[in-house]
Length: 162
Image (cartoon, rainbow, N blue to C red; front, side, top):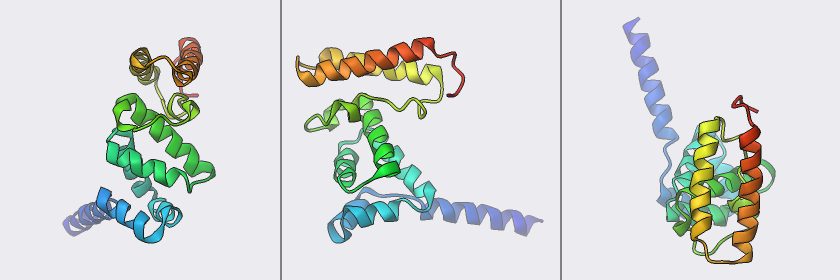
C-alpha cells in the first residue's frame, strides 16, 4: 500500500513538472517553429494549456506579447480562449498592452469563464476603473459599451453557473 501511495505521489509530481511552462521555452518555440506549431505544442496535455492561460491572465507584459503573437495563428477554440485570457490580462494590468487591441478582445468578457457572480462583479469593478482612466477615444467608448452591456447581464444574473 505504501509503495502504491509513493508511486501516485511521484506520478503526480512528474505530471506537474511535465506541464510546467516557462516563458523562454514558449518564446524559443515561436522563434524556431512558428506560432502555429507552438500553439499545437501548448494545447496538449490540457494541463499545459491551462498553465499557459494562467500565465497570460496574470497580466505579465511578456506573456501578453507572446499571446498576441500566438493569437495571429490561432483559430476557433484557441482564438476564443486566447481572447478571453487577453481580456482577463487587460483587466489585471492594462499597461502590459503596448497598444490597445480590438475592444471586442479586451473588453468583452466570456461570462462562461467568470463562473461566480462575485468574480464577475470584481471583473466589472476592475474594468470600470480602467475605462475611467483611459483617454477619450473610440476604443474607450466601445470598451465602455461592452462593459455596460455585461454589467446589465451580471446585475440580472441569479449567481448560478450559466
